[in-house]
Amino acid sequence: MSGVVVVGGGQAGASVVIKLRKLGFDEKITLIGDEKILPYQRPPLSKGYLLGDISLERLFFRPQSYYEENNINLKLGSQVNEIDRKNQTIGIDNYKLEYDNLVLATGSRPISLPSSIGGNLEGVYSIRSLEDVDRMKPEYLSGKTVLVVGGGYIGLEAAAVAAKMGLKVILVEMADRILKRVAASETSNYFRDLHKARKVDLREGVGLKSLIGNNKVSGALLTDGTELNVDFVICGIGINPNTDLAEKSGLKVDNGIETNIFGETSDSNIWAAGDCANLLFKGKRIRLESVQNAIDQAEAIAAVEGVDAIMLGPADFSVLSGIPGQFDHPSIEKSLNKIALAAANTGKHWACTAADANRAKELLQRGAGMVLHNADICIVKKGLETMRDDFSKLGFQFQNNSI
Image (cartoon, rainbow, N blue to C red):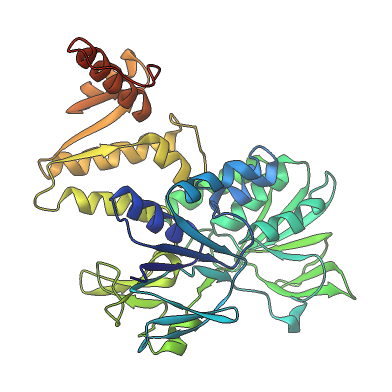
């Protein structure tokens, strides 16, 4: 058996291989990534990692040892150049690799500023990969001026971090309000006030006409005629799904790789997930680029016939939201409330972990049907200790008495 081959080492790719092993899938798994490091989280790149609050190791979904212990074959720094659907092989670097099932989790790439307006000048950056942020980090020096082009989440996050580090920040958004494509006006209002309070010069209804500079960017001309002196530029004007590989193989592609609700493409042996996938939902095709997708899927699971209960994990939500360890963060609480409400509306039970008795009491008052105290490994440890003690009374001996 050739097993499962996953192309892409981002959120979707890593989630697939981890979930397969968790569900007991014991056949061959290969994960291929074009970057030379372990699969990692992208949301913290423009926040905690850029600030220096999160180390590289904390970005990794799992350490190297996990992949070795779970027999997941990693091929990092590798490029897949073709899919041979007839023979069920992919071309990777200079050889062929067979697959039984292929998962395309190729993600997306940032839209760059055209070179005709200076997008190819030194000092113009996009934020998508670890390499992007590492290359940009030295620019973040107090007193410098940065122009952020685009008022989406990436642009706003980059602006917030720059302001916190003492830079002068100017953000331009061509639409009449920030976050117009992805959020309600109330959300835009909140983030506008928040950024202005942090001294971000936020200009809506104004776009970039061109960048100024010889080899390195030194200024910018805006659509309202304003000319700015800047030290560097961050571009956050959107992303495009990476579908080239799928298109060349003849898979159906339309603003992403077309899939059904299960992630199956037009080829029954090929699946797609993440930013590159365009899924069928309620008769319409949508492509989701947000961690919010994980929450919405949980709501959908709540309504599935045969599902009796949902277990909510604040730790998992914190990692997916790019704020690992902040279990009591308002956004985590909001997510828990949303899913708990969905469970209640569909007559399902829900459960959650609690660190102490007060938290357990609070969760029960909110309608939790069960509360788990402490981490999963502690529960397993207690169970093993109980088993050891009970069987010892019957005369059984244990080779290793410590658990």
